[in-house]
Image 1 (cartoon, rainbow, N blue to C red):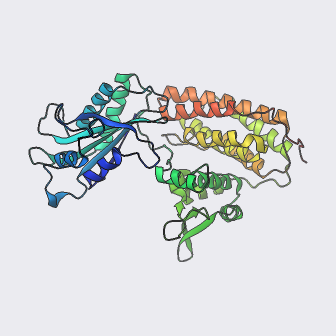
Image 2 (image 1 turned 120 degrees about the vertical axis):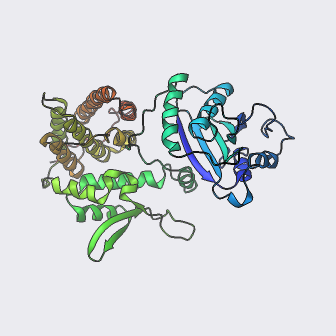
Image 3 (image 1 turned 90 degrees about the horizontal axis):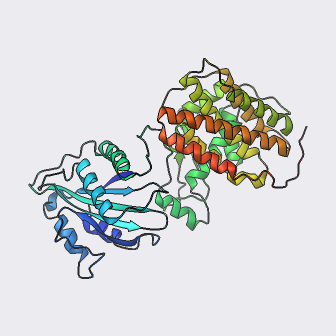
Amino acid sequence: MIAKVMRGSDTHGLLRYLYGPGRANEHIDPHLVGAWRPLGVPDPGRSPDAALATLARRLDQFVSPGSRARHVWHCAIRVAHGDRPLTDPEWHTVARRIAAAGGVAPHGDPRGCRWVAVRHDGAESHHIHLVATLKRQDDTRPDIHNDALRLRDECRAIEHHLGLRATGPSNGTSDRLPKRGEVEKALRRGRTEPARVLLAREVRTAAVTARDEDEFFSLLEGEGVLLHRRTDGAELLGYAVALPDDRNPTGEPVWLSGSTLAPELSLPRLRRRFAAAAPPEPGVGAARAWARLRRCLDEAHQRTPGDTMGRRAETASALSDAFTAIAAAAPPPMRPALRAAADTWQQAGRLPCPTQQHPQAARLRDAARTLVRAAGTPGTEDVRAVLALLDTLAADLAEWYTAQRWVPQRHRADLTRTHLAGVDVEEPWAEGTGP
């Protein structure tokens, strides 16, 4: 269960949106499942006589006109994909617990802030929106300090109470997901994926391929990615990328910095990567490159007794390079499923603990770089063997994540294996192992 807090200044406007069809007709059957009092609160979703303006006026009753800057506390609460839909009484309980945990309406306090919870159902999501106004009914301000942290803990307790999928504590390793506006913009442009996802994939592939900073930027520009270098005099401080057709209302490119795409794609992290990279071996064909990666994956699978948490974390991170390289170098019919696996593994390989560099992981990264630079097309058996080793390593690391209670990484590792299982190695392609 995820609870995301937002702030606003227009109670009536927010209610109008929540009781309306939504931006893409995704608001199915909006109706009230909870409020600051059990009776007497109008529900525009169930009664045609209940006016939105009346409900907004009652929510704003204790908010003076001069203090309405960001006075609306808006919390969207949704269950994980695949969880069962909750009943209205269950959502009512969730809403009361979230209102209390957030500090807007503590349990047993009749003078807390006024709030309502509106339920939405749809094919892809079951969720509620909790709307509160930040003025208590005794004319004082509520204590909402650190509300996001308190809500995270409360969501975990609710998951346990209702038997929902455990999402685990936040550990700073989550992917930066596209916002709804980015998704809708991509659909309007005829793209199947938002610009953020496409750019992250292009930047990550260039990082795995390049031997140094200059080649990294050259590879991006060669793929048609717009590039902005942030400098201080002659010193390069950072970079940002954009798609040529992704523009803001004034026609300027929508720039995203490397660190915004993913922490490992920031310029300082990329510089550390390039400094540790071995010089690429020229003229390597597909057969040798896939065989080398196969040996390195097999070596990574053969753990040694001296393995530390940091070494295993570095291996998991290096495995991200292998996934990225394979998705770029595999025969075209296999690439969609492999790209999904590579994208999914990025969080599985990003762990909430320090990494410790070691030669085995370095060899795996070098093998990934060699693969994506190699000429020729791989043979079926090479691909099948590498995918089997990837699945085995992902399964081993998933068990380790479970032991460490790294729930997001375990979930991502399992999902990666699902994507791998969908790769059709029997798909015919023109085989040729290259030099």
